Image 1: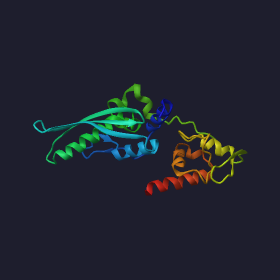
Image 2: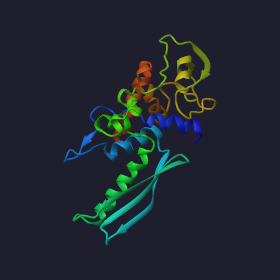
Image 3: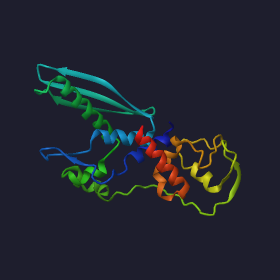
Length: 223
């Protein structure tokens, strides 16, 4: 992953989550986003180009706490997060799980994941004038336009040998890290893994690509 790709994916990771994502704990003291939501965002945007590692785990029984440091990698780049959890009557394993989970979120917090969603619930940093832009955030994504009467090119699909249209070529260019010089596909033969990467420009896609995208996302959910 080069630096341009890194900047692209980290910007996509910061995008606002769907309404209703933010949850409140039982005591209503703090808003949060479930870890599973963060993990799903990482998978959807990075398609496996991320990992995490427990860098440090300290179990301090005399002082009744567990401390964890978790490192999250995006390609070769990484951020560390740390957290401490008290050992309660639920035991050490429970405290360890909570510390690891919180450290994971702490690492993601350095990439500003979820900030736009959590800002309205936070009276401290969320209402700070320097971060006011978070309250009316809209993703800065350039959405291409495609013609319903696209011109045919002299490029062929590597599977069916059908001639590709200009739209086909322009859509392939929207796929991150796609080698269009070596791989050219029509809508029917484009592999699902690449189709799913078109989700950020879904609204602009021609109907045949929208159909393929919905099918590919549905297959992913069923796996």
